[in-house]
Image 1 (cartoon, one colour):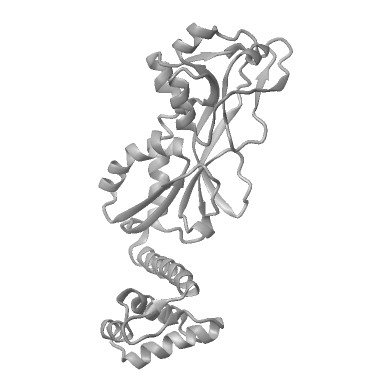
Image 2 (cartoon, rainbow, N blue to C red; image 1 turned 90 degrees about the vertical axis):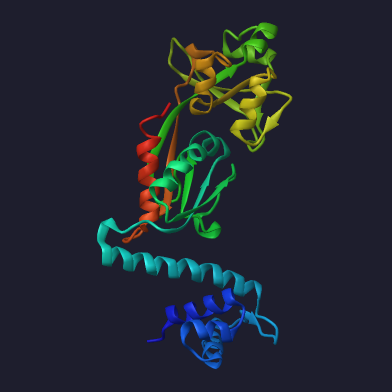
Length: 301
């Protein structure tokens, strides 16, 4: 049986230190042994990973990809051994890559980062905020915060928050344009919408029949994330339909006012922490997901 993990370690050290001789000194191997280990990897993969020169090693694009994956695999091996050796009390450590939407990240994650790192000082947090849907494996994210229905059954998920959606406007906008009394009134209002949707249709529930229907809305501004729409709404540019968790503090402070509440469809936005599940889940991932459930779940709006 070949020692692929050992060869990965040799490659990672050589790439990180920039030479075969430096990697050999650290690992107790000769430079030729380091070179042969990397050559075996290249032969097995059928592609060149390293461009060898007298001055320094240079990774090919394939080498960069292999390095990133190898680092992650070796970290998981270390984590598994710590779990077996130390049981459930093993200290979470290592780089934790987290992806979340801009709105959720700004409202919830960023304020909690100091407390999380104080509790788990051996964790290095790599936080990416984007409103695009990412592939956990391709983007090498450990945890992604996602809203809406979960489509990938190969992933594990834990509910962090649920929030209804509301239509809101600023007091200044309502003073200037009046408050819509029924959904058809939206034809005369500026509706702030999202540019990643081909059609912006807002759902409503008829108060008498309880039937849910949708109404297409229009406006002169679109944006790609909740915080921007919220900001524009606060500036009095129009009506917006967003998750209540985005705007509850503004509603409480009177900066935004809910409208058309008798017609609210009461659709719930479910927000999950999503991760690749396996038998030995890294303690840093488990600790982070548990922390979110503890701190956000009890505060949800």
